[in-house]
Image 1 (cartoon, rainbow, N blue to C red):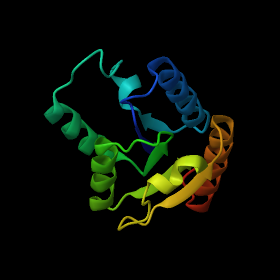
Image 2: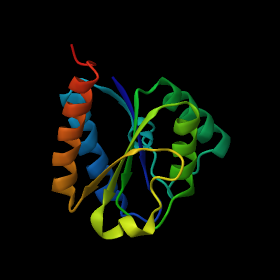
Image 3: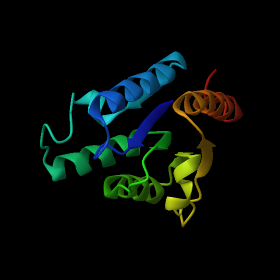
Image 4: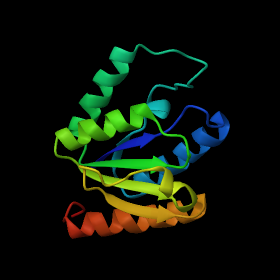
Length: 147
């Protein structure tokens, strides 16, 4: 299975974000899944580097089209235009979408408009990782992707 991970990278502490993304990738790896996580794939640190917007959107569309699941990780109260674009691409391509949103900020987001994603709420990062593992296990075996 291939997973495309959406996440907010602006106005987030970069060291913390990169550590969290590495742990998320480790979960995907433990399941034997391929994943695309932009910052890790390109060693890209926002605000320290500038990438061409056309490159980013083209690469996002390519990788989302290859994905079986688009997972959206929301841990910031500030909305991200790029995450909305990625979710829109996934929806237009008919991809399965799962939104993991931190409980304390979920009211900042109108999560179900038009895309009908699975919505999983979590409290803290450890809770997110636990729920991510449970979701991946359930999704994998419910769809017979892991034989």
